[in-house]
Each structure stands twice: as structure tokens, then as C-alpha cells.
Length: 360
Length: 75
Image 1 (cartoon, each protein chain N blue to C red):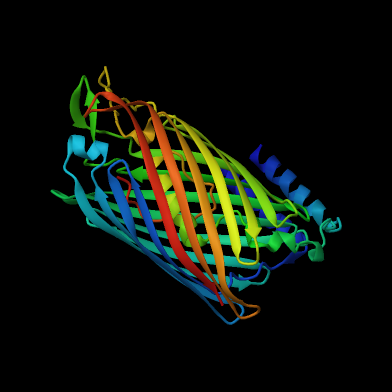
Image 2 (cartoon, each protein chain N blue to C red):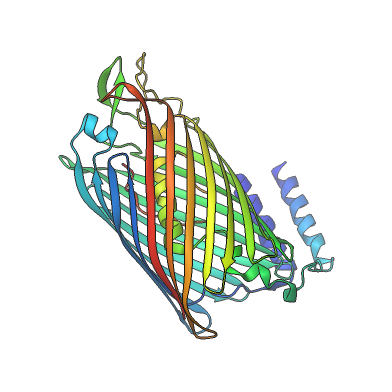
């Protein structure tokens, strides 16, 4: 973390000697959403709610509630265990505080499943510098999970540390660019007690290292094209000490149509090289082994679209919008056999989001 | 060596104090287009969080997205 301390020292010093201006607090807002993921034998859907309310001009509070009702009969579940249904509830609370020329955000969240509980605490600081031309963000999240199994109860734990730094720069009156770096470290039980690996064709419990350390760098640019439309692009490189490496490319386009509609579309490509201990069917015995296809080698492509309808707008008072978004996902795995038919496995899925937003 | 690096960094930062603040080349009144919702990196918060959650579960890579994740559902 020496580089992070250096960035922090440099940032702190820079902020101390340059003119600064506070970024405004997030606007008061409410969102209500129905979301649904469906693909590969797994369906997860449910409601989600968000309310944000300011108290005076320095403090803004927010609360979120999010439900995943999961029905899982995916390929790894039906070939090694039994299909199941369960529900995950997540609660989050946030506080934003405008102090001097910074915005400070504190957040806590709790995710609750019958066999997995996750708590997280996050702190983020946002600062505009150089006359508002540059916005710098620093953030930290600490997570603590309890890992369980239906037959054993809660038997282990996992801890997570996330450190993030980001810079957004105004390039021209029409273009913005940003760079974000995030380092994540994990320790504890990082696998899935229900998942089996294959060694010499036989099913064995997977065994993952109890520590993981990863880095990600994300570069983005977005530009107004001048016809009430905008284009955006991003590239992320990810690497970790499990030898997972991944490239993510995304390009999107947004356009207003008439006074009430906004259309958005995007393409996303993901390429991953798998962990050193991933194997579809290991031909030697090693300390660590997994058949978690999330850690394998594969390509993923996503095509997404969204329509926003501005239902009612009273300038200076409130605005209500209806939104519908659909994503089509496809993952092609280099080295993951569908044990039901012996063929290479691929996954197609759809993601649906229907929601209403209100700014007030 | 570390002390020398720290001194170098401190002197570099201190030297900025003697300089004028860089003149913003895009004036505040020229930033109207940048404030439009179509110029946001992320979409609406709940939708971005849901999309990110779907990817976090299915992909080995994580982080640097600007979206606060939460929970697990990592099966």
C-alpha cells in the first residue's frame, strides 16, 4: 500500500496549496425498481428501493433496500447438488456531509442470506480542485462476511479491504475523462462449500487459497456530440495474484428524442484468462483446485438498451421518470464442460430493469 | 532513500504553493453540457448497482467501476 500512501500524501499536499470548491451534495431523490436476471437455469428477481433526503445544506441521508429472490438450477448446481430457492436481503444506509470544500460519504450495508452474511463499512471523500476542472475521489471499504452451509451452519469467515482512487478531468466544454484505480484484498474462506472440482474425473471439494489480492485500472471518456446526444467509452484492466487477468471494453451512445424520451445503448466485451489453479478436470493433484467457471478463461459479450420517459417535470420542484432497461449477456467458456452432455458450456442470460425515479 | 523521496515530494508540493492556481481553461459558464444526465458515467444508482452485481457474480474481475457493491449472492 506504499503507493497509496504516496498518492494520499501528494493529494493532501496539493489540496492544501490550491484553490478548491465544494462539489454539491447529491440531489434529493427516490428510486423504485423491479429487477430480474434469467439465464443458465438461474432466476433472480425482486424489488429495490432508494430514498435520499437532505437535512439542511450540509447533510444528506440515504437508505436502500434490495431483494434477490433466487431460484437456482444452474449447470454446476444440477450436476453436483440439488436445485434450491433462497432469498437475499440487503440494507444500506448512507450519510453525505459537505465539510469545508470536501464531500465526505459514509456508508454501511448488510446482506443477509440463509448461509451467507456480509457487512460492509465504506468511507469516500470527493474534492473538486483547480477551479472545478478536476474531481478527486478517495475511498475505502471494509467488509466482513460469515460463510455458512446448510448442513453445518456458519463455519468460517471472510474479510475484504478495498482501496480506491479516482480522478475525473474536464477536458473541453464537451468532453470528460477519468481514471480509477482500485486495490482489493481478501482473506478467509473465499470459495463455495457447495461447489465441487474434478480431479482425474472424480468430484472433490474445491480448495481455494485463503488470501487474494487484486488491482484494477479503469480509463473512461465521455463526450457530448452536439445533437442532444453523447458517446462514451471505457477500458478496464484487471489482474490479481491468482493469475486472473481480464480486459473489459465498453462503448455506449445516448440520445434524446423529442422532449420526453432518452434512448441509450451499449456494447461490452469482457475477456478473462483464468486462475492458475482452475481446471475443468485436473490431471494432477495440487494444493488448490477449483472448477468455478468464474475463475476460468472465457469471453463475455453484452448488448444493452434503455429507454427513459420523462413523465412530469416541474422546473425547480420535481421530475418523475419511467425507465426500462434490457441487457443480453453471452459467455463462452474456453474450458468448462457441461457434464450433462459432454459439450463445451456457454451461458446466455437476460437482465431486465423496470424502475421509476423522482428528483425533488 | 525513503526519506529522500519524502523530502522530494514535500518540496515538490511546497513549490506548488508559490505558483498561481492553474487557470481553468473551461469556464463554469461553459460547463452546461457536462451537467446533462447523458454525461454521467453511471446510470441511475439502483440500476447500476444491479448490473454490477450481475457481473461481479459471473466474472473474476472486480473493482474500479465507481459503483459501490454490497453483499454476496456469490454462488
